[in-house]
Image (cartoon, rainbow, N blue to C red):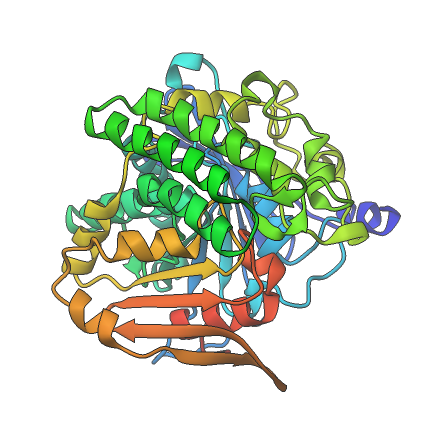
Length: 457
């Protein structure tokens, strides 16, 4: 850590207060390569963001340099922490350079969303969001405050990239941002509104778990029968509008399956749960103790397995990173409010967002879905099921298309498959679990370069 602390002393920090309907408090590095701060998205509701400007930027008028907005899942998981230091940011949790950082293809904007997540905070618990639409409204306010004051940012196409529950935030944000652009409230260029990662129809995932695990011998006929009983109950609850009950049944089904999976991880069914990995180090944070019965809220417990190579994320964010940032309030601990974020959204958790995907496709927005082969919580089988429910006019032709194999660098092994028709794209990533950029960093970086059409790709 000493090297990092030494580098911090070299920062010349500029503090600015700008008013555009909300308050922006931001700091910059001396060379302008990083900027971070808070946006008051509503009175007493503060959202933290961190923007990295790529050192690999290529100026090409025909292909403007893109910006990726990363949305973490959970709901209640920190993009500033997990997406940044565990998956795609410039540094890993030991503050060493990441070879496959997505900065090679785009600028990166990380946000702790919704308010109450990570470094974001509310001054009154009544201000937590209760729906994906409310979260999208806050994110749209944040984009307005950041982009409208920076002419350079406005020239770069924005690509909304999401993981897990972040996919639900992405589609609602996509529609909200488009409307703000149409109303001339938001000044930016929308690129490919994705990667929309998975969680659009929870019903389709719960029905996929049992058959998938039976196919790979993780459960037997008895386990399959029990999983189907609970999945059918979830379907009835959703049909009757009992969304909180459906969320509780989702947790029950996870518990039933987990008991039969024994050591297998819900986020990668080929690895051991709780092994010596980031999974175990994140587990020690205890961010979801208050609702430990809701296993999906333990999203932070299963960040991809990078074994002994990872440092402690909680100590990093509440230690040297907090010191570097300088503007985190003393009473805000990183990630400390994540359980509350999940609890307030439990009534919206199980609601599908397939209609929103239909709307984006109908508007001509490029939608890309990517899935890890050995993910269970958001299985490929479930993703393919909800894709077939789309009412998009091009669906039939998309389904008829053949897949193209994907390779990476000089490696002759197939790393995945790709299919595309008009503005719908799908990536199947082999050997990856829930955390695709961490499990398969090379092919994930290539995928990002293709989708963003980065001049560096």
